[in-house]
Length: 297
Image (cartoon, rainbow, N blue to C red; front, side):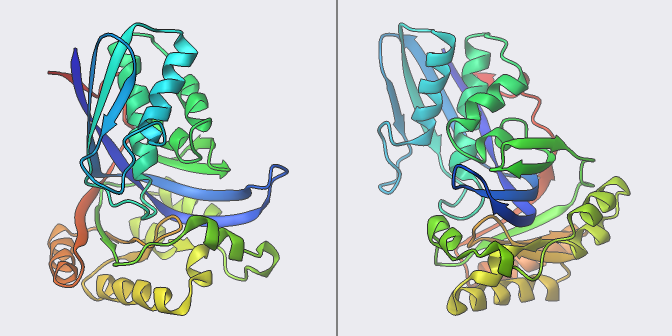
């Protein structure tokens, strides 16, 4: 049996770091959103043993280090299902090390797909709990949509879905090291923070302009100068071409702009594509409906 599904990227409409947890991880407060940019995951299960993965890219591991393999192992360990050879193929479209949650999206997609393939009926909360053991963004990527994420990202609250809008996504040539950026964080010295409560209120009121005005990511303030300069230049182009707001997602380096006009978004995309290879035009996506998402080939 062979199934195919999509693993959707995420953006951080806002990202705040509020402190440190007892386990040493930073405590986060983020409004997260699923977008239509996605990887394509194909899973083939047949009698046998072992889990393999291929992505066709030299910098993506093809063994147990791959987060998709970790997800499959986690699923089989939890359900005690055995006797199957599982082949995972990933067609990558989401840039890696970019703040878009591509690996987490792949892992979440594998959990959803195996849940469907084997008809195990695991609900969202169980899948999110399994995802939490794999990576901080995996729980969000299980169900997606518009959510407040707290703790390490695993404490999720459904929010009023954002009004469907267009998103221009642009990654500069460099990547940011998440551990290195977190090492620079001094929570007591963060002076500017996102207005999370105001952002949630704007979501409740379906006020896209109000949402865009409150888009903010505290990581931008600790970027090294050269990186911040590139991020600011991309944001400037997006605003110039009609974005309601623009900010960096995750720990970067990808920047996204929020548009209420498709023509403006296409123009911004076209302009940025002249200078940046990894540039995409996407839309916001609602919750993924975990039981209605993959096709049997």
